[in-house]
Image 1 (cartoon, rainbow, N blue to C red):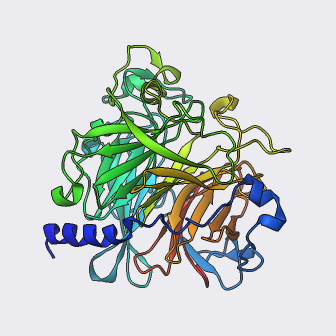
Image 2 (image 1 turned 90 degrees about the vertical axis):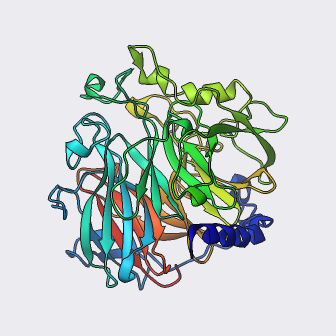
Length: 480
């Protein structure tokens, strides 16, 4: 099937479901419903969590329900197929169908500062940027057969999104550059050769071109969700100290027609129709729903005066949208497209719960947002934003981050909280359930789940353990 035929059929198939509001249309789960057992959907239970040894080395990294097993691979520091050591801090990730029954994983590495490029610095976007992506190939038996750097010289590659033409869009959660002073201890941005804070396309097969999509904005990018019908990319912003926005990038040519993502499009930021600068990071009513519109970002790729700090630079794009009435969220992180709906996670959105401590930002500074997490759904056809879930307390859901959709239609949420971190499921009926709990990582209390993604057959859930000795995990079990 050629690209034009694929585009036509894909649009027709997606168009058939675009009028639906997504699988969570009937879900009214908020702080109010979750706090009142008489109004809460029954919690699905896979069984009690218990420590389970890793099939790779016997070490307990996860607590799992009965019948679940896992194997880790792609461990920090191990030599890769290209001879370079495996980079640190694996984060967002997607799985693709490879040649000959293989599975290909493209994995971000959220490395801050200016430690120097992973892989070959001659190939790097910026020789001193320490982030990027690695690409891992697994055979039909799940064995790692190839592992190599596929993007280097970028900074803080947090999440991104899979593209149906066979690519991963990787996001820099940074506005570093020679024009911005870094807040990272020990970082020296005067070493940087290029500006950062962009999207980068990484083909599934082979390295990326290492050229940014500047028109998609220079801000604290987190993730991307692609609408295959209209060819639009939806972008989240994760700014821990300032208001974050929800954006869309309109490429100059439909990417499925072009076969890649082109620069030179238009960036817009979501606004609530009739409510300028809506404060969506605050606690919401259980039936919260808003008609939305979009405002243009006039200067998506700002340059900053010499000596500008991160605190000066990071909110620039968001504030330009707010000046036109755009809505604000708290730390928009994971996003995923499913049947005409884009689901987005606001990690610290919602009302503060009694007994929960105020979340903090980098350096212990006061964070923007006092809640423990919201999940929102944007209906593309209706241009309507509605609340799917708002955490009533950290003990129920604690600061969700990356998000995925299972073959059953369940949302998979990776927690990045301040206590024990769980991998949780949220069913279409509004039931939260536990899939896994991260075992304590010695010497690393900030270890977290990240990068949840299902293999193309939907039988294996892959995710990353982001820690000082990070790795990727393949998880199998009944009921996923």
